[in-house]
Length: 558
Image 1 (cartoon, rainbow, N blue to C red):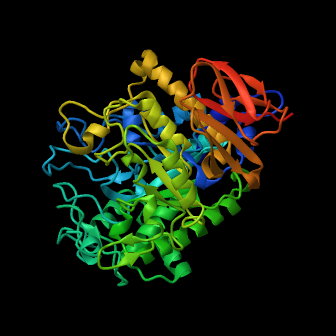
Image 2: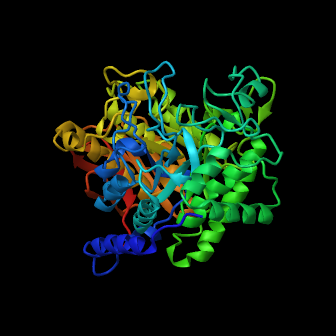
């Protein structure tokens, strides 16, 4: 378990709480309102960010382990860290966007050196090259920083996801030795022709593959033992491993060590979920074992911290099965075999389908298809759809020419949504001089966006849609029904939550009449959450006069 400085943590929490207290209304605090808001992972409005590229809250930790060699463009550490994320949480940036969950790239300690594997010299700024699962990389922060981030997020009703990498270690470098052959394989490289050539192989050259299929007892890697002894925590770590294996009865096989190390972040910090990397490159049963231990750890944290529990929402696991689309249903096809990665393992899958839509989107075709699948094949599970990401070279609207359509598509499609950092301000995805996915990973230029009227206009659009989705479960999990073709108008009704909304897209600016059918009672007053106007339902219609071409109608309750 992570040992943090409790005095420092209490000071940080007190500082955050005192800052929040100044913003409270006499009737109800912001945290009380946020935690009382209904939540369902199937309708999550999630924000995904690269920890190193979002916001630099502590320049003093920008360089560690002598990572000073010049790198290729955007392939070195830029300074983003946990403190920077916490600052934006406390400022209300995520709340203003209607975000109810944040997913960060991995924050565990990375390999100390860099590599040049054909894309230019690169350090592990992205977080996917693990050296030690039990420690945070000082470039990202320390355990006190993580505790403060989770506390700040939870105070605003925002869940926190970490990124689980179980499939591989970091690459071998002059400073980072390969782990023993009982732990990893270094060849062959995956060819993806079958299940075996997708799982029992390395993703790329020089990325040692953890032998997750093994049930053989293995000793800890000597380099890790030496590291822990130098840091003065070897005995503590070993005692905790002994207790874990005694409790679970698992063999001391590679995957179970890693599961113990990853679930410690649940027990110690109360994180709410894991995004799991490279799922299809590991046996399906591994994720069932992982989910079992995550659930155990989450229950243990809740029992130990009853006053910090947001609600009874289960622990969230969302899997990255590369290429998975909502039309695939429950099965992943390897050619020679199909695997169900949902079963007893994942709450949701990252959905690669939405980002493949044409630029001229047929909203009704997309919305009705998603509604149908999510209420039949995937009724017990969910999806997390995205349009842009950190490693997808074919995002929707890569040149940022259809940013408002992208916002509508992302935040109004049924299911969970994953906003990628900078989507909301049109952060460029085409950076001169970059190689490969580095072009997708530029740093947020907060000052430039604040002084850019177009960026601020787009941000406002995202904020209105995001808050509407966060305020109404009907948007994400309500049943969909088209009400009119021009302007395109639809209803979402979530019967279990007594929640109904009506949305119109591509409506005329100025005076407009919106068909609402029987969504709201005749004579009732409704509010357009986009313009802030109210109107009375007359003859199954609502009349508005606004400069927007989007209408977001919600009931008004006394």
